[in-house]
Image (cartoon, rainbow, N blue to C red; front, side, top):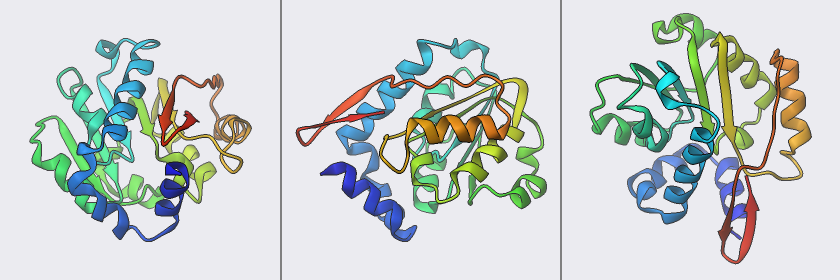
Length: 193
C-alpha cells in the first residue's frame, strides 16, 4: 500500500524526493495530511503566539505557508533541493530556506540557527530519519526554554509511540505528550498519525 511506498522512498536516495517535488502539492493525500496536521496544531496552540518557527523537513512548505502570514521569522530546512526550490519560488519574505541535513556542524556554522525558536514542526519526516534520536537532540537544542516541538509521523513497528517518547525524554524534553491526532484513509487502509 501507500505506507510501504512511502517507506521505500525514504530508504532510497534523496533524488527520489527531488523527483516528487514538481507534483508534490497536487497530491490530495499530501494536502489532506498538511491540513490535518495544521488543524491538530491549532487545536492546542495559538498560532499568534509563534514568532519564530523552524519547519524541519519542510518539503515544498505546505506548513510554512500556513505560518508565513503570522510568524515573523521562519527557517525551513529540507535535504531535497527541488522541494526547497518550490518553497523559495513562493517568495515569502520572512522565510529563510536551508537545503541540507540538520547536523551539529550546520547549527554551529549557519547564522539562521543561532537564534532559538518558539516552535519546531516536523510533518511526516522523523519516521524517515535513520538517526531520529540524534536529530531530536539537535532540535531540542534549537528551542527557546518555553519552546515546543510538534511532530506528526506515520506510526509503525520501527517507529512506535514508545520510541518517540523515549527519544524525546532522552533529548531533554521535560514534558512529553504523544497522541494520535488524526488518521488517513489511503488505498482502503487506515493509517494512524
